[in-house]
Image (cartoon, rainbow, N blue to C red; front, side):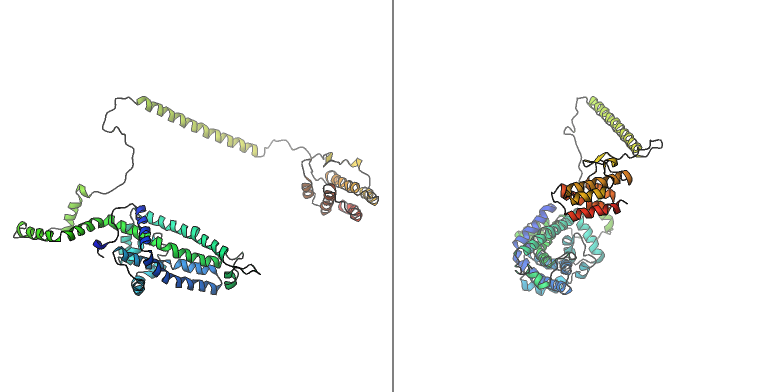
Length: 471
C-alpha cells in the first residue's frame, strides 16, 4: 500500500462527509465493482431460489441471500481497496484472487459476527489489515471511538432502504408487470413455483426474486460508505493526509533533500556518539506529560458575551423575581397535585358502593312500548284465538300487532323481563331470550317497516305457538 499513489483526496472529514465520499467512489468505479459483484452474487442467489423452490418455501431463499451478504461484501471491498490506491483490477483478476478475499474470516463473519451492527466499517480490519482474535477486537475498539454510532446508523439506514424501499418496490413491480395466465389469473412465478399466496405463506416467490435484486443494487453502496468511513478514521488517527503531503514533497525535492541530509550528517552530527541507557517507558511518560499531549473533549456550555468585562448593571432584582416565580410555580404544582388527589378520592367514593345507600326502586312495567298499550286488561282474554280469527278474516297486520302486544305484556307483567321505553326491538329480543319472540318480532318488522305482509298460514302458525311459548 503506497499512500503517495492514493487516488482520493485525503483530508479530515466529518463522518457524514466520509460516507458521502464512499458513494462518490462507487460512482467513479461502478463498472469495476458491479461486474465481479454480479458474477459472484447472481449464481449464489439463483442457488438460494432453487433451494427455496425445492423446499416450497420462499422465505428459505430470502434467508439464504441475507445470510450470504458478508461474502458479497468481500468482493466489493477487494475491488474498492485496490482502486483507492491506484490499482484498477479486472474482473478476471478479482475472481482469480478469490482465495485471498475468501480466506479473511468468512466463517466467523457468517456465524458469530453475522449480526455485527457495524459490519461495513469493521470489515476492513479483518480483510485488509489481517487482524484476528483479540488484536482485531482491540483494533475495532480503537477505530470505533466517536464513529461507532455512525457506522451502526449506516447499517440501519441501508437496511431500511433495502427492505422498505427497494424490496417493496421490486415486489410491486413484479406483481404489476409479470404476465399472468388468462384462464386462472396466476402469475408466471405462481405457475412455475406453485401458489404461495395463502394465509400460511408470509413471503411469496415474487418476494424471493425482489429481495436478491434489492441486495444486488444496494450492497455495494453500503460497503463503499463503510470503507470510506474507515479510511477517514485512519486518516484522523494516523495522519495519513500529512504523510501523503510529506511524501509528495519528498518526491519533488528528493535531490535537494539528499544534499541537505548529507551536509547535516557531515557537519552537524557529533563525532563521538555516546549511547544513553534510558528506560523507553519512562521517556514516553515524560513526553506524554507535556501540555501538548492533552486529551480531546467536546464541551458545550453557555458563556456570556461580556466575559472579561465588568458590568455596572445591578441584576439582583432580576434574581429575586426569578426566585419568586420559581416559588409560585412550586406552590402551584403542589396545589395542583393536591387537587388531583382530592378529585381521585372523590371519584373513588362515588364509584364504590355505599353501606347506607337506599335500595333501588322496584321495576315498574311501562304502560306502553313501541307505541303499543301493554295493560293486560286491554287485551282480549284469549290473545292467540283472537289473533287467529283476525288472520282468517284477512286482517294480518292487526293479528300480528295483537300477538306482539300480548307477547310484550307477558314479558313485562308476568315474566319479569325489565324492558324500558329506551330499549330497541333488538334489545327486547335479546333480553327476552325466547326463540318464538324473535320469530314474532321479525315477522312484525317485515310487516310494519318493509310492507311485506306474511302469509295467512304463517300468522296462524304464530298464533298457535303463542300458547306454548308463554305457557
